[in-house]
Amino acid sequence: MKRPALVALLVALCACAADLTYPDGGTRVTTILAPDQNDFAQVSPVFERRCGTLDCHGSAGRPLRIYGGLGLRLPNEAGAFPGSGGTTPDEITANYRAVIGLQPEEMTRVVAGEDPPRSLLILSKPLNLESHKGGPAFSLTGDDGETCISTWLTGNGLDKASCVSALAGF
Amino acid sequence: MKRRVLTFLAVLSCGDPVTSGQINALPGENPNAPLGEFHRAGQPCVLCHNPTGPASKAPFSVAGTIFAQPQNAVGVDSATVAMTDASGSSFTVQTNCVGNFFVPRPGTGDGRPTWDPEFPIFVRVFKNGLSRTMQGQVGRERSCANCHNDPQPGTEQVFSSAGHISLYLAADNPPPPSSTCPVNPVLQ
Image 1 (tube, each protein chain N blue to C red):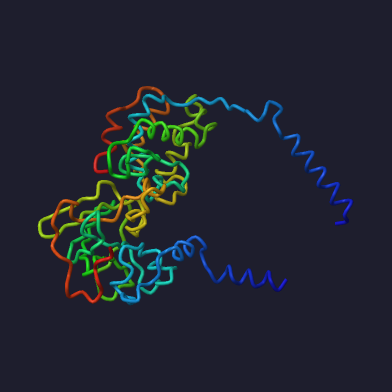
Image 2 (image 1 turned 180 degrees about the vertical axis):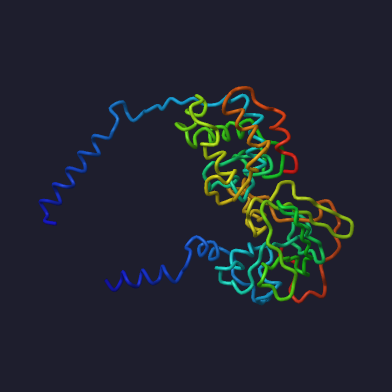
């Protein structure tokens, strides 16, 4: 490519880039429907125990990062490390943000009742309906972990008993 | 052009750059612990001992090291590591005198029992009536030391490490390490 043409291309690219900057300083908000944050305190242990071991999503280098008392700890000055003490409120909040931030638009459709809970990666992956490096983490039928998460997502009354029984043996 | 070809060949020769990087980050071989079942105690064994790794002739399903106490790294010999997988299949293996244990993959063992677990697996370690059960499950990691390691205090890694596996508590008085081991079982 000749030099004038290259310069013209660079100018054009810069112009495009300028078009992408936000006139209000870059702030953009995507409004989403999210499942109940208070109820998540009872759902979080399912993610912690079934998904958040240190070798899976309890790893700082993985998506859907899950914190927990037995797994990855949110950096703290209290001396909490994996295996010491329970999950803190800050860690539950971080887990909530990780879960609702994975597919915000798709989650909005599920919370609105337009799509089924299994359309979300947080269920399709552990159910192995979608390729999952960790393989199946939930049984395809009758897994209390799925019931707990599904009832939380749809907002039709969290099945608290399932959230507790989903932890049995884990 | 020549340079590009050389770079391409170099990349090819290194294999998986992630695994290569992890292996290169490990402490090197200890000259007093030659290659064999006593080497690299406390390191993530299956990084190399897997079907595509540099120790592919001896691939492991699961492997690790059992140490005595949290505050030191002294290998425990003849401890039993009992594992149960998601399908209910169980397997037990004993540690050698530096605390290392390993489970050969089916079809590749040297006559030892083999096992191919379906993850997650649940682990218990015991010796002489003393038993320690892992609080969580192993999701998919085959090298215990990938999570059970000893990061430098004050670093971010302390929030993601469960510390090395120890059979005894800090206040216990464990039996002395093996005195007949061909390799010193005291790492620190």
